[in-house]
Length: 150
Image (cartoon, rainbow, N blue to C red; front, top):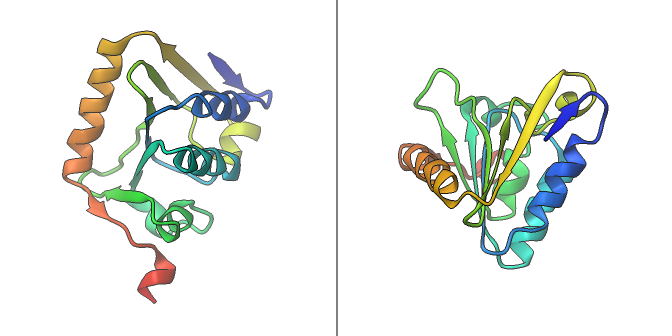
């Protein structure tokens, strides 16, 4: 577990992402953290399946990583079927889940009071989170990025 403040929660997430071997699915309301985006791309370079599912607000947020991921060819979708797709979850491989109030943002790291749990060694729990991810993935819209649409 981790809490912010103080800073350090992003580092905890990045370390866990570095352990991914075959799957890294990210579900986020707000995603503006360059270190977490870099760790996701590093995992992809290692051959890890990377999927990113974001709230519709990320289509227009100024510093969202949505366009960065889309322009890198990452499989990214926007969950626009809810008032807010407020999940903050990572499903890593078959036995790790990251969740909590911590948005993947600088504000969550530096300014907000947040919590984060890394749940390991529970494949049944991981399966439930993976199934929920796929449920939302199935009704979400592929996102190509603002630069490619212009």
